[in-house]
Image (cartoon, rainbow, N blue to C red; front, side, top):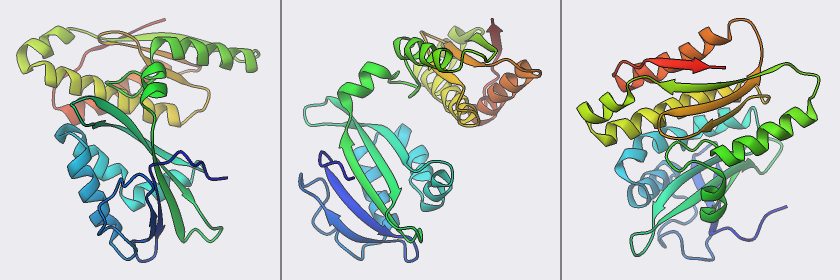
Length: 239
């Protein structure tokens, strides 16, 4: 069932990596983006005009066809959300959804819709993780549905985060939080019984199954973010 509240719908031929068709009721794409245009060209154009520079490299990797196909190996829908600068300087949040149109996995259907209100109500704008309110809701739901499990809640803090802001600037501080958020989200994808959120400042919240080696796993997540950032991170976890 196709939702009709999309800004545009695109069909993508995976074998040729081209657009098959563009249904664009809100004129969200330029007129030259019709059937036969290379998907990579569409991605470069969309990223260049819609996203701020700090998001473009990340989006280019996640919108690549191999990344989409890998994501669809685990879930029926591959979704991405990014902030877009709207007319008048305001920020809107757009959601791109990719699904297979056929059982042969030769054609992808992509839609884009506005999710500004829902997104800001349920997610942390900076990291893309749940906010505290949604974390409580999702954690409560998980514990209610799986009461027999053994879970632990952890508050994860970055030590001396103020030093990063003071020494490298607030943009670097924001990037640090985004990268750690991305790694925590990747870690969460390994287990549907994990709930992750950005709380306030440099604090993150996790609810996850209790198991041996948990501390080491979380420290490895922080190390991956540290490697990408190139700035030493000191992480403290509290039960």
